[in-house]
Structure formats: C-alpha cells, structure tokens
Length: 161
Image (cartoon, rainbow, N blue to C red; front, side, top):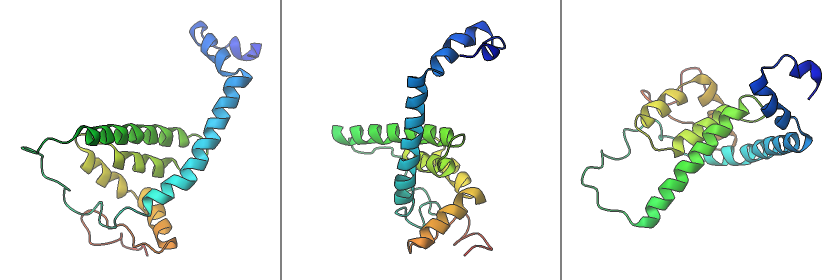
C-alpha cells in the first residue's frame, strides 16, 4: 500500500486495506465482478421474462398457512436453497449498484426468491418504482411477453407502452 494512503488511515484500517490491495485479492475481486456482471446479463433477463404478468398485481398467493399439512424434507431443502439464492442475489445487486451490473433488477429478483414477513408489501412497493418496472417491461416487450401489471391497477403505469 502506498505511504500516502497509509498515513491518512487509522491504524485499525491499515491491515485490512493492505490485504485488500494485494494483486491476488484485487484480481479475485475483478474476476468476481466480471462473473457477477455476466451472470446478471444472462440470468436476470431470463428470470424476469418468465414471471407471470400478474405476479405483482394479484392478491396474496396463498393463505396464512395455518393447518397446512407437513411437507416432505426435500421441499424444505428447496425452500432453504431458494432463500440462500435470494440472499446472494440481493447482496450481489447491492454490490452491482457500485460496480458494473444490473443492480436494481438483481435486487428485485432476489427479493422475489426470499421468504420473510412483509415480503409481498415490499415487492409491490419496489416494482412500482419507475426505475424498476420500466426496464423490466421494456425487456418483456423485446421478447414478446406482456408487461407486468402493477399493484392497484389493471396494467402498466400511464404513459408507458
């Protein structure tokens, strides 16, 4: 690490930063960034074009679940893996807000996969942001899919389409 940087840093930050600027670590970060970028270019459009048009506008998909029959263990494993993938996508999306990549779209895809209280309300709020639904609907139009229907309406936001 250059002296001009280390002299302006507190002592507690010098060790981690010295580790971070090593060529092997920087190369790994750059490689990871490129990999996330490529995966987001392929995976996010693939996923977003397959979401049903009414996914965000329909009412809750299932009731509260009281009295639901027991599920086989493999279904629980799938739910756990789906949530892990959702967390990875949300974190990758947050990173992509700072590096090249489709950050907002990746965060939306991760949120759709996660299961947590208030998820539906958060999904609906996020998808109504013009910076989120406009690029998604433009992508869906390019592949011949209908636009997403937004909550509280029966179609796209006025002025789109």
